[in-house]
Length: 247
Image 1 (cartoon, one colour):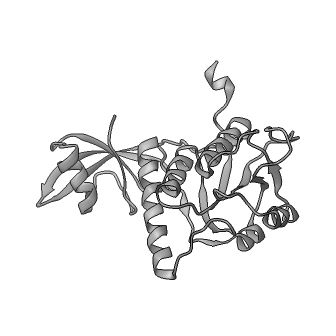
Image 2 (cartoon, one colour):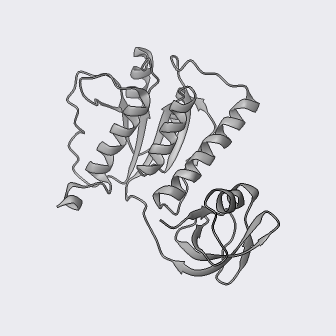
């Protein structure tokens, strides 16, 4: 499989670009690529470029940009995920897998039962960390646009700004099915709670803000599992993971 690299600057055919230390180390120290080996590079604006490893300047890799590739792997369903912050690798896992499943934006949320708090400095560091995970996941899964990871915010702020068809996942006395839809859906906001679930007050606030309850079945799922299941349901119902694709 060809190596894909995100480069957050302008790209143009015939141009030589120098990669940063992290990407250069991955090319030379991990994959041990040689001059002339092919790669693919994208900057998040849509499409990608074929490239070759042109040279090595000290420890940095220099690429030569070749042809533009009009690749588009974005789902027709735009999904904004509001995810209650979980601890350590669980949040990392949620960010990674949600990107693979076609998320467009993720907002980490402070909720009553998330059990996580940050000062401003640590919050900024965590956002940078999660954004790097989103970039890496986009590189791996073939996307040419990188989802945005927002700064953490309160549930109240998120509810006030939510748009599109809105769902909150929790343990509800309802079937694990999406409601019937009379017309195609292009924009969804999905709300996933922490390990301890949303409080009754938070569920009530979300429903007042127009969120429909979405049950994921009779079993209680971990927060990172809930995100994967809910995103798969939405993509299979309204996005690009359709049963006809497997016929």
